[in-house]
Length: 96
Image (cartoon, rainbow, N blue to C red; front, side):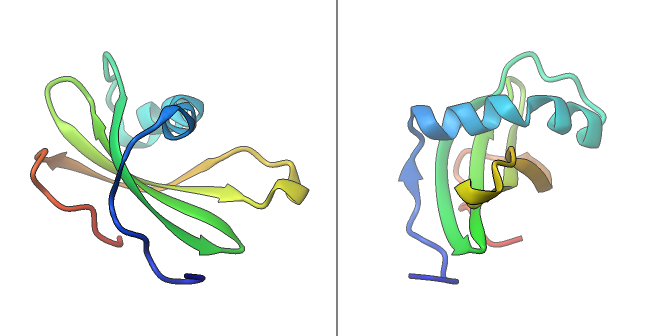
């Protein structure tokens, strides 16, 4: 559904690749150098591109990311839009 947020799904290789692509942005914006970043699950929102809301295991904590992936015609890389630190594995992914 355009504009609405999807149901939560287990992370796949594509979502992990998005996390890998924004890892330097995560470290810069969060001010932390996470030892590893493993995508756990995600939701999507289709806008003029796709917002990915991703739950990430960052070693000693869980973080939630909002990453914007522009439409392919723009040939742009994903961009970290927002994040939430100190989440737990049981916290649902919500719009932020």
